[in-house]
Length: 334
Image (cartoon, rainbow, N blue to C red; front, top):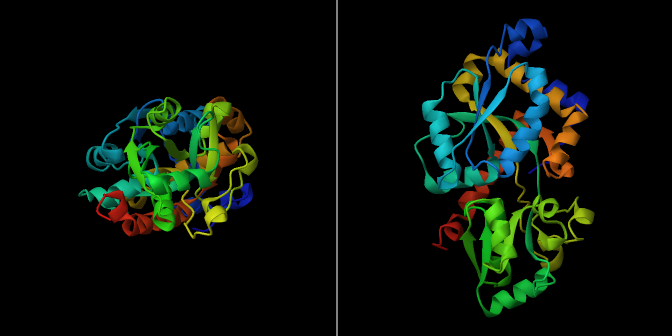
């Protein structure tokens, strides 16, 4: 997947891609939109990573929207409950958006094969972060390195806590096992908080999550490796290497990436409204207050990375391809 980090100037330019209406003056495009609160469907639990990230963004975004951002949480079936509700029950009028973690939720979509379709029913139009996924242990774990984990897992199957079975981090540890001969058993623990608890209490041997696990756990955890082709956060992740560096493997980059999505019909019918949403978000991400809000929410600022619809689409297509490739391992049929 190509890196789509954008400068603020480039970001403002590219976010005009919502259609011809984006070329109009702000006042003409807005035409009174939004006149009421923006409803956000979050397909995970309140208190999780998406909730913390969304609230930090909303604290700044609301002043550019001039309206409230009102999240509703609909967890279940690895995010698919929220997507089914959004695509089937919410009006495609641009007043309702979905805010999700594209990686696990698209992987879940591939594995569960629901009736709603991507990108026919919804598209992602604004990425908010790009977060490497990692393997971690509690600080007092017997495992001091990823090499020790792999050696132990060659002798006996190790349990691996993950927030949900369909997740880029799940693909990472399964791919590592496939490449090295190590044996791992994924244990979905229903969210990042419960996954951290499972690792810290010894319920599972190791855990895999996005890199945000580190600012949340501090010196109580140790990051052992990163499932990426590079580790831009190495200094803040205990100096952890990439899995490829250690084992000479060719595991693809498997970041976690959250984004706002909109009904495809709303995109087509209301390009002027989409332009308002996109431009107000770009202003939010150019506002210095956002860093303060993000850090208060214990989200790693280094992972915040705005991206336009093209960046979202490239990520989505890449993760769908990986989900199909690793489907046998993720479903236990490999």
